[in-house]
Structures are given as C-alpha cells and as structure tokens.
Length: 138
Image 1 (cartoon, rainbow, N blue to C red):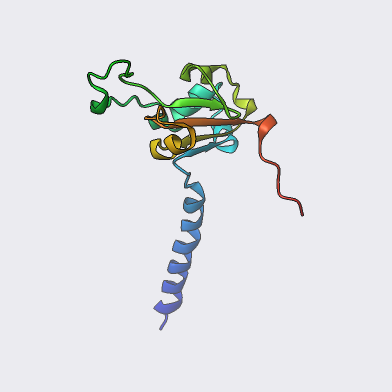
Image 2: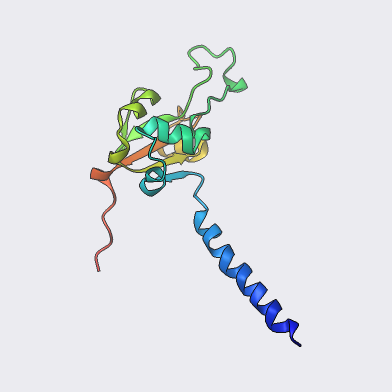
C-alpha cells in the first residue's frame, strides 16, 4: 500500500510536466508576434518565415503546367500584406518584425477559392500591428 501514494505522485508529475509541452505546440499555419519575439535574431518578415515556417516559402513545380504557354514554373505562394496583394514574395523583407501581428499561410485549395486560380501555391497573409483585429466588445 505504500507504493500507491508514490505511484499517484508519479502520475501527477507526468500530468503537470505534460502541460508546458502542450503550451509549446504551435499552429503550423500561423506565426504570431509572440513566437517571433522569442527569436531576437529575426529582423524582418522574410527571416521570420524562413526560420519559423520555411515550408511557407517552398517552390513547388507543377507537372500540370508543363508545356502550358504562360504558365509559371516553380511559382511560390502569393504575398498579401494587410489584405493587399504584393508583387513579390521578397517584399516580406521590407516588413520589420516589430510591425508584424501575424503571418498566416493559406493552403492552395483555400487560397484559390478566396483569391483565384492563380494561387496554385497558396498565399501568405501578413497582418501588421496597425491592422490587427479588434477584440470583441464586452
């Protein structure tokens, strides 16, 4: 019977130690300002994506576009900053991390429905501090 309290304490320790690990889980499609702040070496939006979610920047070659006139081979995700489409993904380099509220990746299926068929590689949506969503009224 002496082992029961010891075993219970062991199980309690497992539950308590599992809680911080769960808090560490990140949404794989969203980079938050808090997550960026944990990496002081990051200075701009491109570095944030490159270091925290490099998969957002992947270039996927589509066999479906082979031989199609005007098709872009190796296209990457399309960038939006505060809901405005940007001409180049490299424009992420112009956003200071202090100005970023959230960076979200939209998968191709959702991006095509919302923004059009040219979003074969998805979309990267940057919301800056000045455009962050307002909290709901109380």
